Image (cartoon, rainbow, N blue to C red; front, side):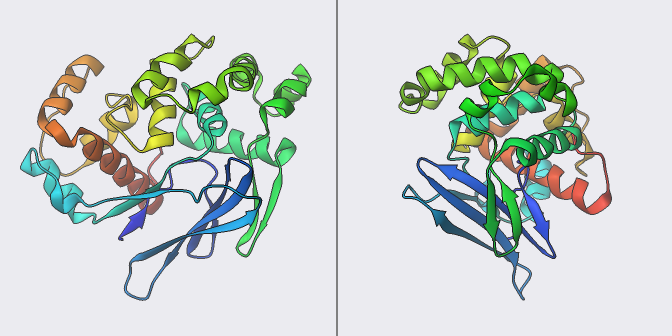
Amino acid sequence: MSSVMTDHPSWLSAGDATYRAVRSGRSTWVVTCTPTRTGECRAEAHLVSGEGDTPVLDVVDPARLTGADDVVAVLRAAGTVGRWRNPDLWDALATSIIRQVIRAGQARKLYRAFCRAHGEAVTTSSGPAWLFPTPEAVLALPDDEFTTLGMAFKRRPLKAAAEAVLEFGAKWAELDPAVLRDEVQGVPRIGPWTAGATVADLTNDYSLYPYADLAVRTWANRMSTGRTWPETEPEFARRWARLAGKDLSAWTLLTLAWGVRHANTTGAVAI
């Protein structure tokens, strides 16, 4: 595997390795990505505590991609990409809320500060990590604590989501992903972008992601294809879906992974 997608804000670095703590049911895991001597990436999951299902790593091989040759060539050159499914619906939903209308770099800072202040610390061989605060912990926080952590604008949607997860989380976990995307939009301040990003994080089905969002459009334009893309979301969405065809999920995931690597290696602003 050439790389692991590290778009989630919980990913931390220790030397050349990256790692994050995840909650899976009643268990806590650490997932890691370590470079090998051959330049590949070795991905592993280590149980820290409790009992629960092992986090799932999906590997997308661009060699199998179909669609427009110019885009496919760029994605194939980047090699295979692995992405861990987020096993925690609450974390996935809360992360998407924090990412609403702000850049990835700022969302990462807010997410990490909130976790360090009120989440559970997890000791790993690579260094400390933190889980996102539980729904109960979020509901118990006073309003001024959100303000102190720069999260005042996120307070209401996070608390609404926490209440909804406590009430409906068990039901939601059994739903088909497309149905779940619709269902969570019943929570106040959860719109199509947040719902789609949440379900994609949970399942790695990026055909459910809002694939005409600013991130996808930006990285599509940065790739050296010589192609001119539509500027509006609706027009971009139609063309992207038409060109990708049956590989819409893989196209979208690999493009976002390309963007993460591009930002990390060039210093470009993460979208």
